[in-house]
Length: 397
Image: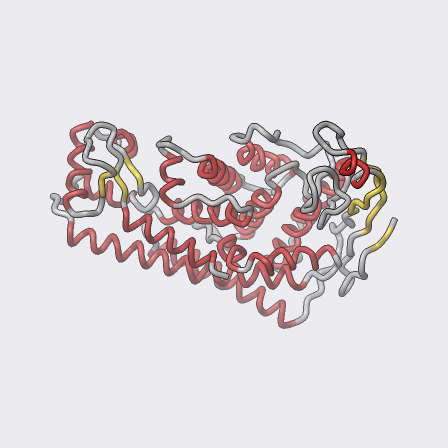
């Protein structure tokens, strides 16, 4: 058993153990089989249930600032946020988390997937992330292994290549598909995963660690265990939000912390590497900066969507109480609609749905995809633009 570089301030670094790999020979050259046969080193995650969290004053101050920002923005949105903003932010978090894994879908593609309108493969995977986040935030009480597994199951459901549950095989990050010998990181052998996850869940249950530090460390340990064959990054970032909700810092909105991590993805991955070497400061700093970035951008997005709603009130010609106004209210969360979608969302008859769409179309709030009225799809173009611009700002590192 080997130890990596020494832990910093008492936080345990990874150990490594030798394991033996025999690659599958089907479809693989003899040279590749020889290059990827024999011993490799797999990580052994240390127990962290009772680990001491010691932070420099500057890191602690940054974490406290991030906590204060999240709580302030959450409280602000509960009193002055636009009605559909929680749904908008949940989708934004899911899209940003997916994009970290290079699964990109535009706001229009995701909205189309939600209504079953020509969904692309990536959009369906992002939509599954939305459903996983919804499941994550539905849990009340202590976070358990079962609740984490349920989130992962929702995420993996539309992907036939993978099955939910703790992995039963060795996985690795980077390198070649043939074997782990040239990987950037080899997580623990699968026979160590159940015990490592039990230790992590116990750590998540602690109440003596400042919130941002607590969830950053839990997230980093989760990613290091890499408990699933696929979906570890997205599930691990859902865990961040489960812990935020349980802590009470965010009670009404899913402030898209993943958008902040996406903003500086290289630094995020470097912080995870540093964590594995026993240095916990970078990942706490990275999550704190991400929370501060996301808090500011969330208020900007709310203001922009509120300004759109104010502008629509000037442009739309409909009587008070008309269904057109109810439709306008839900467009930020449903920016692509059909007549059938409007009927279901508003609970109205077909003629009333037609009238609502026509009133918004006359004002330019909704734009039809084509002149053909049969099976017509309508876009709230200004909303889609605002959401895509938010995503683009997060991408610009």
